[in-house]
Every structure is written in C-alpha cells, then in structure tokens.
Image (cartoon, rainbow, N blue to C red; front, side, top):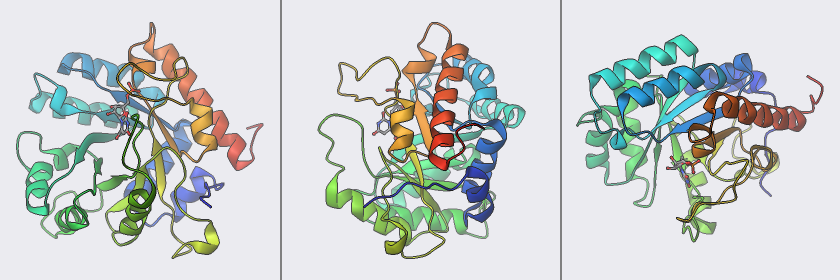
Length: 277
Ligand code: 6AU
C-alpha cells in the first residue's frame, strides 16, 4: 500500500539526499507553505507581477514559458531575481518527452535555456529510461554550471480525464526514479506512490509528491481537468500542492493564495500530528 510521509518538512529537509529537495523543504518550513502557484500566464509583465505579488506565500513558482509570447532574457532575469527576493524555487513545467539526444538540447540550450533558470523540471518517461539517463548525464557533468542545483520530477500520473498514466506505467516511474537518485527526487502524481517503509529499497528513500489539479471552488473544467481540494490532496500524500486558475484567475489572487496556502499547511500539520501548531 502506498504510504504518505508523516515526517516534518524540517526533518525531511535535513535528511534528504537530494540538494534540491533539501532546499525545497527548508523553504516550505520557513515560509509555512507547501503551495506551488501554476502561473499559466502569457506575457512577461503579467508573469513577473504574479511572481512578485504571490512570492511571499509560495514555496515554488511553476511556469510554462513556452506560452509566454514575449519570452526573452528579461523573463529569465526577472524570474531569477524574484525567486531570490521572495525565496521560492522555480519549476518549469516543460514535461520533456523525447529521445535522450533531443531532450538534452531542449533542456540545456535552444530558445528556452531551461537549465539556466529552472531549479526543477518534469519529465515524461513514455519513451523509457533514456530521457532520464541523458538529462542525468547533463546535470551531473563536471562542466554543468548548476551542478547540485537542479532536480527532476517524473510525471507519473495525470489529472486529465482518461489519463493513460496509470497502473503499471505509474509503478514503472517509481522503479525508474529509484535508478536515478542523483537527479530525480519525486513525482507529479495525485497521491503518495511509494510502498510502505518495509517495501522500500532504501531507508533513505523519500520521493517528494507534487500534486496538481487543485482547486477549492471547482471539481473540473470543460476540457477534462479534474480537481481535488488542497486538504484532500495532502491527505492522499501530496507534499506540495499546485494550483493555477483557482489562484491567478480569482478576483483577488493574493487572498486566494493565502487561502490555498493555509488549507495546504493545516492539512500537512494534521498529517504530521501537529494540529495545534
Ligand atoms: O490549476 P489549473 O488547472 O489552472 O492548472 C494546472 C497546472 C497546469 C497543467 O499543465 C499542470 O498543472 N498539470 C500537470 C503538471 C504540473 O505536470 C500534470 C497534470 O496531470 N495535470 C496538470 O494540470 O499548468
């Protein structure tokens, strides 16, 4: 049976073997936030305004920079400086999926230069382990300037109706992640995925679960998206909750961010047994 972690972020931040996960847990603990805002915003000015407005309340700012129509060096520099100002990490939701040789170029060069500015990127392993192997080689190479500062999440499940990322596919994502601990520290998934402690391959194993499809007001959209609330997600094993339109498209995005942050944090506190803190 899959088991969620009942350890505190502070403890996981101390013990985790991956530096990106350690930093992430430390940010979550210090800001009392397990919230990731998904900023699916199409121009640089609005994207950076969103990061500046919501920065104090989030642990991670998630981007889809391929939808930013005026993406440029100013977008990158703006994101990097706001990440420093507000102490959040940047997750580019690029869902890389191709042969190893192609994804190395998509990740490290090309128009987006993801490796330069995104602490975290997600990968789809539909094509097998070659993608993880290739990108692990990139981020562990002695020539890579951000060695130890970049981490990957595998897209192990999807929230869209009829998703094919289920069952054996999802389990194989877990097996594959176990083979690349130097680069891969968790999953995008709707729940905890790993077996209980007695079945883990290592007592140090601690995959971080990012759960998307989070919305307090709605159960889905007209295009197949399916939602759960922050509390439901954390109870099922989410370590970080990813919310997009529920926050940035609401009447007051700061009020909404605080509400999602508080609901996610309270559910985490309940899970680790500190309900009164
Ligand atoms: O809260 P929303 O529905 O406005 O936005 C959800 C965000 C979007 C999706 O591209 C992304 O989460 N997403 C992902 C991710 C993060 O990989 C996987 C998935 O299964 N479903 C999903 O919505 O930016």
